[in-house]
Image 1 (cartoon, rainbow over the protein chains, first blue to last red):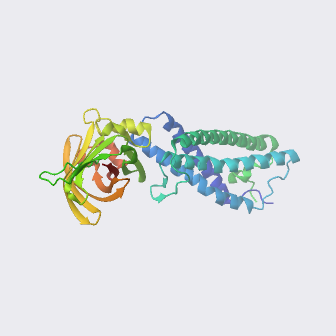
Image 2 (cartoon, rainbow over the protein chains, first blue to last red):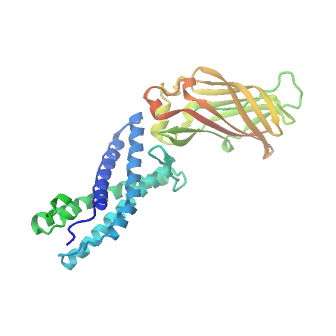
Image 3 (cartoon, rainbow over the protein chains, first blue to last red):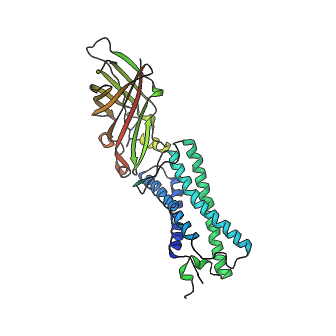
Length: 179
Length: 180
């Protein structure tokens, strides 16, 4: 029986976690920094990493949807529903958070040039009032995303330590039993 | 950033009476600039500037133009950016409140197309500047429009670590409506 997801999906899962944590830390630092060359560099990296999260998302979804692993095996029906809702919400926020950041950047009049090389189109016209609104929505979506990530991790640890059902091993290859 | 262009044509030294003074319609005029930071092209501008021109529409090449830009009125696209570039390392706006372009001569290139040769003074330094522009009849007056490249380093605007993230070169774009 298939114990886990395929390695590209596992890799994208953990890479996404790393990216959102680093982007979040940079984003938080930016809040309190006064303008400096370093701040402009951090702004750029924050946007580049966020766009990477966004552009990796379709590949993750594709891999996830084509994986034959039955993720609801061993779950009560309500757990299966909760799990589906949680994963749907996580994917939605992985889309919304960077997209709102991109929109904010466009509205602020500072386009994104991905890794300094690929100019991304502006999604909206420059509009400072709109940029402020989007800033709030971006921050809100990120906070919600991180809250759900914590819940998601808690559920995975619960499965590992209390249910002993191998759910965590799907994403952590070295926890899988040897064939 | 730069610049500014005010065109003033003060007419002519020895000139025909047909030269006339033109006044800037500031609300319908812009002095903008495009500069890259972290390779991202960003647009900024100045909120306050004046321009005067004195020329005979039949012979603009005999006219002179002057533009004065209020350096503290800069709009970099963000409040923190505006504060930063008024500091001594950049425009030193308190000490040098004006940037001025004075055209010394104008050459006719083609119908409606000209090149202004003049001096651009920013932050206590003045350098020769060549600015191509067009003159188009508009609203009973003339719209003077053009763009030219500029280097921050030529005027000591924003040095040090900023060179890593903000490009030295930028483009200034002006569009000035001159009314009788």
